[in-house]
Image (cartoon, rainbow, N blue to C red; front, side, top):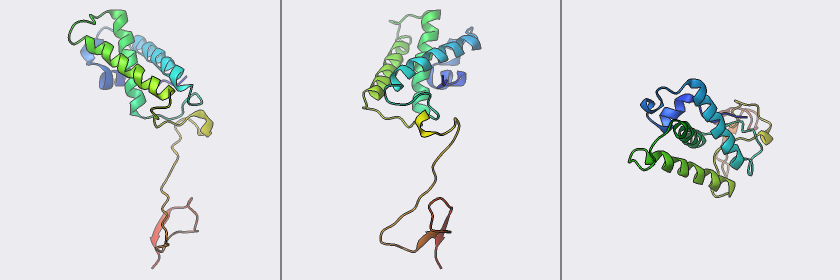
Length: 151
């Protein structure tokens, strides 16, 4: 299982650090694991799991789910002004994940079907033009570095 966010993301994306005081690192990681599993339930309908790479949009929404899980156990008043945002953020995350599952949102992820190892960054720059403007690579191959215009 992939852990789609880390403890620092909880305060970066989810909630102020003061709200998590008294909650152990172990409890935070358990909430992140549960939120990541929940996200996999949606992602698995579109992608081959586990994901290999993902962007901050998935980190953000998993952090929202994890914060809700942590605070629901500790307790909060969902009708109080500041606390109602905790529930609202969870609902935003669920709608976003549901939109992925329904094909309405396409996050930038690399799934296991790509054959890439975790942490692998693929890609590069490919320059093409038509008609030819004299640009070339060393061997006329896109796999080699771009060298610029012929002189």
